[in-house]
Length: 108
Image (cartoon, rainbow, N blue to C red; front, side, top):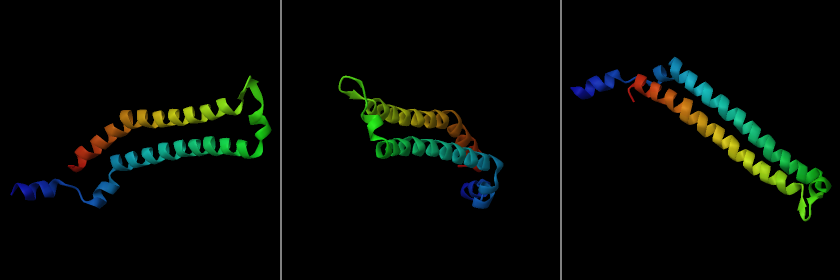
C-alpha cells in the first residue's frame, strides 16, 4: 500500500518539465553555462589567434629570456581556472539550492 501512495505523490515527467521552479533552474543553468563557455572560447581561441597571426608580438622580450607570450599563456590558463571557479561558486551557492527545492517538490 505504501508503494501506491508514494507513486501517486510523484510527479510525471510532463508535470516536472512544466514546473516553474524546474524551468527557472534549467534556464539559469543554461544561461551561466553559455556565458562561461563563450568567455572560455574567446579566451582560448583569442590566444591561439594571437599565436597564429602575431608571433613577433609574442616573441618580443620583456625581461631577459622571457617573452610577452609566456605571461599571456599563463594568464590564459589562470583565467580558465577563474571561470571554472565562478561556475563552482554559482553551482554551490545557487544551483544546488534550486536542485534541492525541485527535488523536494517532485518527491525525488
